Length: 71
Image (tube, rainbow, N blue to C red; front, side, top):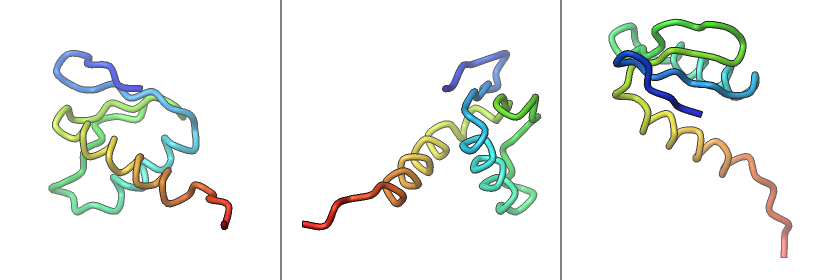
């Protein structure tokens, strides 16, 4: 999902997850935005210092949206 390219991180994901990351970036103030360039629907260049934050937000998103059968 992540690969380092020339000091930046190249992120590759499916379209829905890329949109989630783009929306996460859009919700931040201008001084905290982390997307450098959106290459296409599934590839994004981001600043390297946000990799852990993105991974933790994705994990939280998946946990919040996982169905657990009631016991």
